[in-house]
Length: 475
Image (cartoon, rainbow, N blue to C red; front, side, top):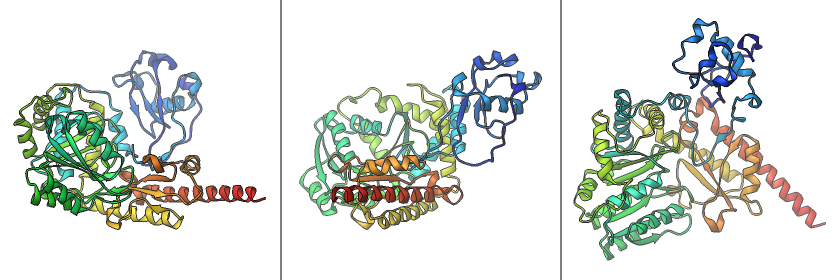
């Protein structure tokens, strides 16, 4: 359809939620715009949806194809003639990926730049500095690498633990098993201290294990997303420092960074590993790890070669140190758009200079969600009051209701929550994510009320269906 013949579309109000995307390519445009072969990003009110047009085009203004007309043309294109649009927006109350802000989406949508350009080097440098701020360290060395949070396990196992060395893994759910498997793959001897389902590992058991054997490292899953258990990282670190000070303290913070209090320097942590797609409020795809100077010294003094290529600090440490100074460097091409989006999120997180208010808001929303769940007859999987995560909630459903009965109904109400990960009980519980912008911007967005209302409605429908089924069987 020619832009000049398009009908006028209604204006959309400005708001800070995800809006549909439209890809507008040269194949479906007429006139001077047919020379376009790449995309340029337009946002409302210049387009009724987020729209991409060639970034270097100079024909728009000179050829009479105004942004208003272009907006109308974009509106009238449909999926049948080459325009790709997203379906109705679903609000993610999953554990990840979390909702991201419009500023993060805008940063992600920029045309890719060279990873060795001065502009990108500055963006990467800012990320490194802000990651230190988020983790509360002044001396830790960040590693920001393309990959998932699991890559953090590989970095620990490949660089800090030599084959045959012992590691103590504290297990509070599914991801304790994962970290153990990774360490064993790299040749470590792993001892597991396993908490009862929904419980924390008792401090006394940690102390006893440290006294029985010398460990190169101890791993703590700060929040295990399969159970919602929040480990006492600070308390465990104190015990390690007292009983086995030579043991490296490794914190898996994939589901806790930027939603739970973490003070790397003050607590004496040697490694904090995380990922971009949870509390840090960016899209998936970045493995973020921060190593203490002690951890780096131990890595440099290892007697055997590093047991990975891609995860090797031999490769990545010079790159990170260069970007830390604002200088470009190369080992593997970084995901420039993801890092640009991550930069946008970090700037929002660190804007006030302190994370105290962010942590407070996550704790406040956590109490609110958990109270709603309990009112609906659900029980917390995490048993201890002080051992429940603030960025997520795992709850058992009432007797006779399965996870599938609730999750499908939530989807019809525009909300996505997660099923269980613990195999033996996976059908009996659900997991609710509440971290990032849905929490800190809740006063304006209202996502938490949407979560709560949808959960109430879904539970009421599931209970009504169960009662009908019970009545039918009793006839």
